Amino acid sequence: MAKASKIIVLDDLSAAARWNIPVHPSVVFIKGSILDDKALKQAFSQKIDYVFHLAAHFANQNSVDNPETDLLVNGQGILKVLQYTHLAKVTRLVFASSGCSVYGSQAPLPLKEDFVSLHLDTPYQITKLLGELYCNFFHNYYKLPVAIARYFNVYGPGEIPGAYRNVIPNFIWWAIHKKPLPITGTGEETRDFTFVEDIVDGTLRLGVVPEAIGDAFNLASNKETRIADIASMVNAITGNKSGIEMVARRDWDKITRRRASIDKASKVIGYQPEMNISEGIKKVYEWIIQNRDRIEKDARF
Image (cartoon, rainbow, N blue to C red):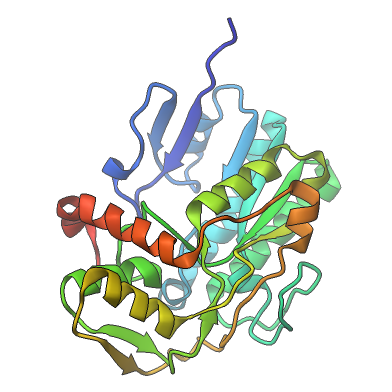
């Protein structure tokens, strides 16, 4: 009989809740930081085949407010994980980068993997690109089998609303509390919202397809959706009559449109996103309603 696989989760819960991590015999949870050698040694104490580096000091505004922490977690953190991964001789490391970061605000649409900007707007965008550069170094110098996923506006069940979280769960949270939904800018801004199950599918493909090694791939929906339309959908689903309110654009937010090309990911790893935005928002709404009592305790605004 084959030995059962295990999933080791290392998370310091700085942007998560313990109840939101699956409890299963195959899931081993370690509370700790990727900056902590003791925690990393514990995580790598067993034979590790695949590493999916999803840890990050998340959100552009968070990085503007806390640039040193952003550099530590997103810079030194990925460097430490790469060092341990190299020593462990893993089969593959997949790094979660950000397509909303590395292309900057002036890139032509649709965004393609061969365009990367050095003129970025936040520390988060800078350190996400830094993470890619470290991955490239370890691949080129140590021959570490690395693949890079460039995520675009990931949303879906499981994300607890909060001050630095994404617009969809936050809109839903405010809407079920009968508050107007704040739109920064004009509402005409677009993003390439990608459902979490599609992201997981693409990420796992990057972990096993040989041709993905040493390269970066957009994981996106390949569609633009206006922020104003997201607000309308959320208010309709929740029955919120409070509408919207326009607020000032954030100083760092210079991106007015986002749409990624997924041609490369489709051709090389067979990535094909399936979820449409209206159904995806419904699934987020259902998850938030089901977990409302626990979210009330953990949502941090």
